[in-house]
Length: 304
Image (cartoon, rainbow, N blue to C red; front, side):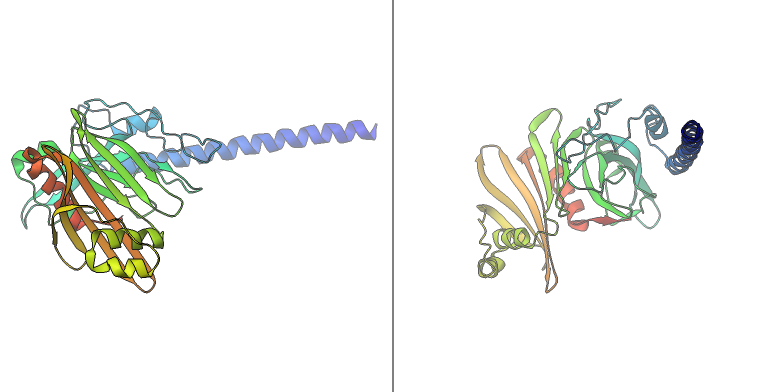
């Protein structure tokens, strides 16, 4: 008899616990939905014809946490695009404002990238707040319809911001456990035209090796650290300042050249290296330089 009473009491307690769990879960869903709606309501879209960001959220298209594989890699959902202007892993999520002059502000679409994160922390692919107005980037009014900004969110207050034509698509976006980042994009009409952005993250040896490769004055230092680099063959190279170099590589690709820029920062406690390389024909050199100029202003994580 006592066993039956205890069993009934246990069943009743489990039912009460289940009802409390369901109630708590419902409240969490409601609060999360409210936050998402508030965030997306404050972000305007420059193309009314596209599916809005909140509609994409409701249908699950902007769900960054798409599940994990046994290897710890986060799977990327197959995002659709309405106009072909973004890619399967980048959807429009707002606009980026550009301060063209003291009197005028322009805007271009902002595409949020859903990348693979090889670590326990997986940030939302949406920015946590509206991005600040970008200073010092001027695009002709006739060119604004060609360009888009691409954000790979990295945490609660930073991400990686790139400028590229809207006709390009993201093909790779990965963040390593040490904070290293790699983003690859290509022209959807001609995949041979492509770009690669990389940040070596907290890998000090990687930073030393890359600095020794792209900055000749640091080659001896890198070798002394035990990380001798393999310098590329430069067709031309110029240092823009003590941290930034811009170059053209001799890659024997006929009409195509590799245009690039690299950033270095070194102090006793920190070493940073990032680079952007774009392979394109000389006919596209103006587009290339516009992308490189934007990178030169924001070569590392973009804090917002």
